[in-house]
Image (cartoon, helix red, strand yellow):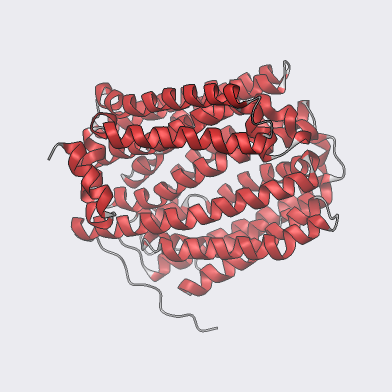
Amino acid sequence: MAPATPPPPLSDPRPTGLAQRSIGALKWNYLGTGVKVTSQLIIGIVLARLLGPEPFGLIAVAWLMLGLGNLIADSGLSVALIQKQTISARDICYVFTLQILAGLGLTLLALMASPWIAAFFGRADAVPVLRWMSLLFVLQAFGQTATALLRRDLDHKRVQLLQVFSYLAAYLLLGLPLAFSGWGVWALVIAQLTQTVLYSAAAYLSVRHSLTPTFRAEQSGLFRFGSKVLGSNLTSWGISYFDSAIIGRMLGMVDLGFYNRSMNLLASPMNAAVSTLQGVLLPFYSRLQGRTGDARDTYLATICFLSAILAPAFAAIAAIPETTMLAVYGQQWQAAAVLITPLALAMPINAMLALGGPMMQGMGRAGMEAVSQGVGLIVLIIAVIAAARISLAAVAWAVLGVYLLRAWLVTRLAAGLVFAPASAFLRALVGPLLLAVLAFSLAWSADHWLAASLSHPGVRFIVVMGAAAITVMFAIGLWGRWIFCAEAKTLMHKARPHLAPRMGSLLLRWSGT
């Protein structure tokens, strides 16, 4: 096979060009992610109603193994490719070689370890599920390098199109029909394997980097930097998945299914909003190395702007837990309603702390985040084990407490890196917090007031959330000058040429010009 010539080394673009490319990438990121998350939520709801909680508990066990293995397979090398100012064809081959070998090794290891993992959870029927899902290690590894190159070049349009296409093709053509036909958990397994094959193949064909194996990179430091990212990612994985491992072990597959679907329902839109922004911020911060002031302003602006969007939305959901669960998943999932309030409150907190990682990694300080994440992991293990002895609801409240601790630790480290005082964070967050209180109060009042007249939970959920959204949007439009911090308004002014005229006029009014 004669591979095409890899892309030339990338140099640091001019600030203006970087800003324009970043804004364009961000627009495509959010457009594609919006389509993807909406599709995942709709298809996930249909699958949950068809399959019930137990199959999702089994698939959650497989994702515990896969989440850890994928981090090890990548070893932070994808981030290293993005972060470096210049890369060569040999560097690309080096990263691809290590990722493929790690993927193959992890697949073989998972095949052998599947009986022990299944025995840990007391479910022998999980063995074939784990073994088939282990193929994802090598299948995903094939597309990791190509995806990193696309993200490095801020070609998020192509990444998003490929992700949306592969997901819809796999789940509409296979996942849903197989679930309707009674295939149970295997509908989820087959759809996931198909999606991964389609995406990895399409990502590689979009880049066509060399497949020649090599164990030496052109420049030193790729593996060293990647190992620091890996350390942070491993602790982040522990925080994200250890709660599920404890629930599956101590409370069983049904409770794990309740927890997994509740967390997925809330975390999917949050992760979409955050990961989309992270994908643009990482290369952006990488080009801001040595420009501390610009990095600080960007960090504060993104915290303020993202919190103003997420905090009110999740506060409204937290106020109506039973209505949310009945509206989305139906009566058989009602027992999971006790999880909604604490997990919904945890989402904007998790989003805020997640914004520190791209800045630390982009500015060459990837090891800083691992310290705070390690502390958070230790606290999580202790808190969740203790809470699982009480109830599933207690686990959700313990997770909220751990997220608060992590947010404080990560934000403190990030603030020190860019010399941001505590008062700056207070100014960035006070407006979004007031919006969250407004949304919570309105949603709670409306839900109780409409309970008698609108007995159908789906209709009531739409009316309550719609009323909360309209009220928050009206408040932002009227009082945006005081809600958004100065850094957020400055960032939006830079993006003004790319926004709708009405949004541009709002920016002028908010700034008083």
